[in-house]
Structures are given as structure tokens and as C-alpha cells.
Length: 308
Image 1 (cartoon, rainbow, N blue to C red):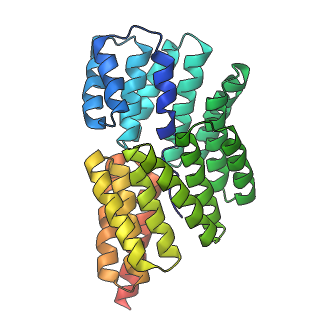
Image 2: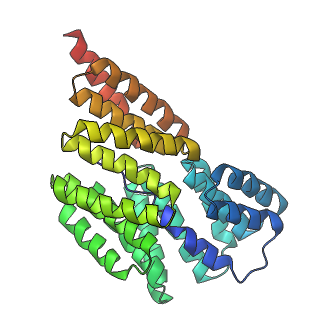
Image 3: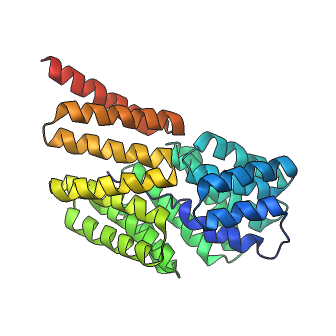
């Protein structure tokens, strides 16, 4: 499979920034959001920590720190940050936003039950507030959860509903990526590649470096399934290089995992084992227990096969 883009979280950035526009933010919190906007996530996290220390009762300080942790693939700290923001959310707009982020974190670590619960909470508030943008994001997230349950037709239906509500290139790119993912798991690789290329082209067009890196990795994964290993390797290696510049441990791990599968498909078990181990180490750091277990399974399987 290919990985849902943080889309779950990544495309929510503009929502967070929109939510704080009318507020006079303290300097450290403003710097945190500004560096997220500039896709400088490590620096943003430094400012986020400072913002929380300066104003421990600030909703936006905890929200911004949570966002930086999510972008960097630090899911346990992100969940803590967002939950700290809940009692500080003094209106439905803030609560809607933080529920959306929490659903994203739970989805990222493989906890689909809690992810669905928070996504539906956010969706309910979005509809009450007539917030079409966040309604689309919540529907997108719910589609992703149905996808992970193997309910592909249902997932595709929700994804296309979400796409119809998209009003920005960024939002449409996210939907294209997730539609590609569904088609991939339905073994319809030509359609999957077509939609993923649409996502990549839009993300590159708007200068979204973070999501472009995700797209390169996902397109590489699709080419692996389509047995076009030359293209697959080129896209995966480029994606890993970009993820290293960003510093996202989880997506670096995903890139290594994709290389592990590629080399295994080519019959290079020694290289495959090495990359699955590298991926496992990254997932341990990020807290992505689901993908860590996937890697352990493949490591054990390859070792057992080489003993025969």
C-alpha cells in the first residue's frame, strides 16, 4: 500500500493559520506558526516549546507545538500537546480544529477506533459551523479509516465526496493522493499512478515541499507494485532525500520500508533486510507502532527464508 499523506494533518495548516489571524499572538507562538508556514518544522518546534513554556495556558501555543510534532512524525508528543489544548479551547471552532488534529495523530499510529471517534466529533462541529473546508478534511480522514479497514468502495465514495468540497489546489492534491491509495489497494495501478501524478504536479506547483516529498515516495511505491523498478527506485530515493531535509522520522522510515519491498521484489534479500531494519529503527523513534510491527514481520520472514 501507499501511505496517506499527513492529510490528515498536513492540509490542515491553512486552517490553523486562518483560525489565529484575528488574534494578537504572543511573539513565540507567532514565530512557531510562521515557521510552520515556511515548512521549517524543526525551528517551529523550538519556538513551540518556548511558546508553551511562556504561556502554559495558551490554546494556540499547545496547538502549534502539537502541529510541529505531527509534521516531524513525533506522534506521542503531538497527542500530548493536542490533548493539553482541549480544555483551553473555549469555543467550537477551536474544539473542532483540535479534534481534527487528534484524529489525524491516532490514524498515524494505527489507532483507527479513536481516530474515527475524533474525526466524527470534528465533522459534527464543522457541519454545525458550516465550515466546508474542515468538513472536507474530516470526510477525507474518515475515508482513510475505512480504507485501513479494507472497505475500499466505501473509502473511495468518501474520498470523492471530499474532493467535491475542495476549493484549493492544496486540498485537491490531498484528495488525489488518497484516491490513488484506494485504487492501489484495489490493484488498479494505472488509475493509482494517474491520480498520484496529479497530486505530485499540484503540490510542486504550489511549492508544498513537505507534501511533494510524500508524493515522490508514494509514486515510487506504486511503481514498485507495477513492477517498474527503475522508476520506483528513482522516486523513492528522491523522496527520502527530501524527507531527510524536512526531518520527518516517520516518512524517512516509510521510504526505507518502500526500498525494502523493492529490493525484496528484485530478489536482493540482503539489501531488503537492511532497509527494513532501518525503517524499523525510524518507526521506533516516531512512535509508529503499526509500521514498526510490519517491519519486524518482514525482517523475521526474510531471515527465515534465508535459513532454508
